[in-house]
Length: 410
Image 1 (cartoon, helix red, strand yellow):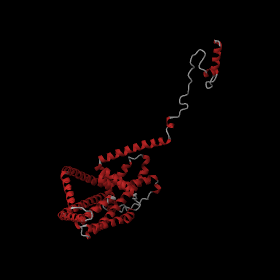
Image 2: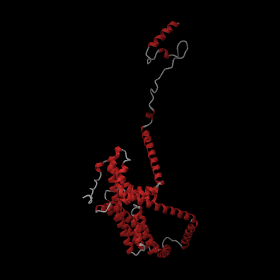
Image 3: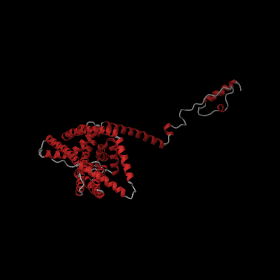
Image 4: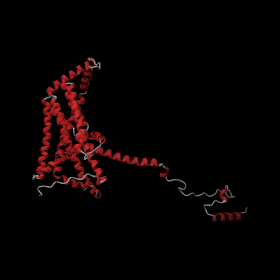
């Protein structure tokens, strides 16, 4: 093959389309031994996109995972912020609960011609004075019966010791003395811890007093200008969401009011029934125990159990096993009455929360803010349930009660 024939052959190959392979490319190379030109392949041809190479299940898990991480980080930051200003948050939450309890009284006085400012001041002062008197009464009863309770406690310990010696558990007096010695040694060796606990208790007292003052002033302003505060709060909501939030707010307040009033009624019935029972049995400190039972009813599940256990222990220490069993039967009977009759009848569907949600909310509130968090956890969940239900479908929300006319305006 001469040089001219080879040029003609190359010219014919250049005229062919690029996507048709020629014969010269199928051999090792041109006659002169030079390597053939590289074949250009379009970028990405024959390869899937990176997201398409990942299985669908892995992509869904990744999408859910990073959103869950962002949500968990948001919740963690929120919990840390609440823990840092726990006193402020609990004081405001307590003021909301107290306002929900006292607001109907203020409205009733205002309808009967009392100026709103005077009605607010009278109701707030009387409410906090009543709480203070109850606290002073409990302290006075405990201190006045401390000597008698101490002597009965010693007698109860001796009775318990004799019962253990005569019981079928084969507990010897040496084992009881050994356990008593271990207990006294443990208390003696932990004096430093007791000192730290005393300092911590002083800090708690300061926080309680500060929180009570903040709750007092917050309650005054909420009772006097609650509607104005609510309208001011709506300004921080985006404009497109204001109609929905404005409709959910009054229903949330209705739920909170129903919860507070229903809980007060249920707590009063529990305190009267259990207190009257232990008073008939002759258990000392019946009235302070009834007040403790009333206060414990505001902590769902846990408060009723702890206050009932306290009454049983006092009956056991002061009057023996038989009285303690009778108090146990009274507490169980009242709790069954509360769970099956009082709560469904008084609270109704307005604050219906599943028992599992109650357990988890009380546990979460206790972990975040202690006893105060456990108290406000359930009403918070009930209010959140009402708000979410209304925002999902406003047509299924409970209708608002009609406003009562103001007699002064008439």
